[in-house]
Each structure stands twice: as C-alpha cells, then as structure tokens.
Length: 193
Length: 193
DNA sequence: TCTATTTTGTGACCTGGTACCAATATTATA
DNA sequence: TATAATATTGGTACCAGGTCACAAAATAGA
Image 1 (spheres, each protein chain N blue to C red):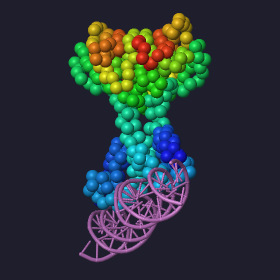
Image 2: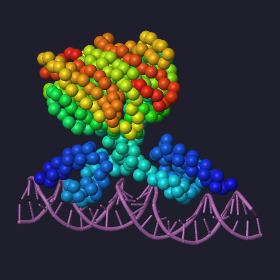
Image 3: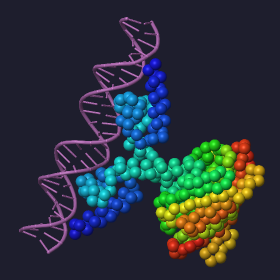
C-alpha cells in the first residue's frame, strides 16, 4: 500500500518538523530514507514552508513576545489611565501564556498585568510592590480577553492602597488588594517593582 | 574626512541591526545611501553575520528561551523537590527582568518563580492557583540570586496550603501563602494556573 | 500483466548571501 | 596642485536552500 507509506510519512514529517523546525530538506530526506524531491512534494502537499521561512517565523514571533514580556513596563494594552485615580488595561491571552496540558493561562501573566497596572497608577519615578492579597476566581483560557481595572483607594505619604479587578467579559477572574510604595532613592528598602 | 563618515556609519549600522535584525543588505544599503558592497564590507569589518545567520541565531535562542519562559512549568532552576512536601528553586536576576529606571526586579518575575513552585509541589495533572497573600520585603536587584523555598503546610481534599519564602542570601525578599487546587477535569471552576 | 499512484531526477530560476578583484571616487597632506 | 592613502563601487564566480514544472522510473493493486 504505497499511499499508506506516504500518509504515515506525512504524519511523521509534520511531527518531526514540529519539534525540530530547523531541519533542511536534505536532513529530512536522509531521516526518512527518501529523496529530497519527495520531501519537497510532501512539504508542498502539507503546506509546510521551507526552512528559511520557518526560521524567520520562529524568530519574528519570539522577537516580539520576548520584547513584550521582557521589557515592557506595562503588561497589557493601556485603555485608560488617570494617575493617582484609576486605570484599565486589556490583555489578550496568547498561545504562549497557557500551559500545554490545561488550556489555562498561567497565573503570573494575570499577576503581571495587574501588578504593572498598580504601579502605573502611582505618580513617581520608582514604585515598588509592597504586598498583595489576591484571589484567582476562575481559570482564564486561551483566546480570552482580560480587562484589568485598578483604583487607588487610599494614599498616605508614599504608601498607596490599590484595588484591582480583572474581568473576562463581565466575569471577575482575579480580584486583589495591592499596597505599593513610591520611592525617592533607588536603594531604599521595602518591596519589589 | 572619509574615515569619519565610515566610522559613523559603522556605529549607526550596528545600532540599526541591533534593533532590527531582520534587514537585508539591500535594505540597509538603501537606508544608508551606499552600495550593497559597502554594507557587506562594513558587516565584515564589524563582524556582523548575514541576515540568515542572524535570523537563525535569534530563532534558536528564542526557541530555547520561550520554551523556558513561555512553556516551562517551572520558572527558575529546580534545586530540590519532594512533591507534596517541599521544594527549592533558584532564579538569577537577568538584565531583562529589571526595570530600566530603577535597577529593581519586576515583581511578576518573583511571583512567577514562587507561583510555579507552589504548583510544582502538588502532585496532579492540573493545578491552579486559588489565592495568594504575599509581601515583598525588599527590592531585588540585577545580578542577585533568588532562592525560593516552598512547603506544603496543609492539605484537605484537592485544596493545598503552601508557604513560600524567597531569599537573597539569607535575607527574605518575598514571603507569602498560596492556596492552590488540584483539578481533575480541565473545565472546572476556580483559580488560574 | 496492466494501470494508477508514488517517487525520483533534471533543468531553469530565486534570494541573500561569500570571496575576491579591479576600477573609481574621495580626501589628506607633502 | 599632484600624489598617495583610503573608501566606495561594480562585477564575476560560487554557495545553500530552496521554487516550479516536467518527464521518467519504480512500485502497488487489480
């Protein structure tokens, strides 16, 4: 059954490229014991782009993702901000934020959104998180859009009490109270930003 | 002064490629108003590899990094783990984890380390964070090494109480109490992973 | 054995380069 | 101002890792 061989090879090929996207057609041909032409045909039939395209795709996506989780001061997209009063950010749950097994967002992404909003609400050069008391009300899934709303409820000297509520549609998914500190000197004690 | 033009272009070129690694020599040539040959010479002198090498480098690195920051179940390096009892992870504060202004670690990295440890301590396919009550005791700076230690203090049915303490040397930087839930069915309510 | 499918090979072409060489500016200074 | 040094440009041959189109060979199934 020739077509079975082919079909099986297609499945195997797809998987092989999936978890090793940096193989050339030649390497794949050797691995599957067929000619390079066959691999090219297979790729064409499966709609799998060539090595350079794959590499480029991985690089571009990762380049963006790393920049967004690694460097941004604010996680999520700013919708509204009145410093010292209240603000809203919106975060779309991407593929990379969910665990593989469950399709559930990992807590630190939601925390990051809320925490960076809390900090953005305070008008000072350096703001650090003092303490957090929060509850995750329900899991957030891939594709959902989380809207975090924060409000400064109290302020005494350099200490700020902030309430954050994150919702998907109208359902609360995270609720918590932050205490953050505005610092003057960078080397001061208390908290993490 | 020809060499000055050249030198300036070299600096600009290096910077341009730095924050836009996906430019071809032709694009760069147009941007700098010189020929492609000149760009090639410049790259050779500066030791900057060609587009495909750069793309490949970004992709490979990011492939690893994303796997670790985006997909890894655990943030930080595992030092010790007795599931259901206690465990320790160690996280070195990298350049990308600190805010630009203050040289202080952003809270969500410390949270992510602690949170993922809390989850790892529970023996179940799917574990979600229910609530967190934590305090950041002092800022953590670039280069410091954070050691998080977690301990399951109580367990009733699928509900686990976990205590986490993160230290730099012997100084506590984060302390908190987690409540996490072990789930059977993926679609259950309560919490975020 | 015959036919349809699958596999392989071939040649022309593409991008984004390397490596090298010669010609042509441009510039600094004797 | 002429000349030597330096910088820039253009051209050729070559490479990897492909695309696309087509023909030929191998093989399986009836």
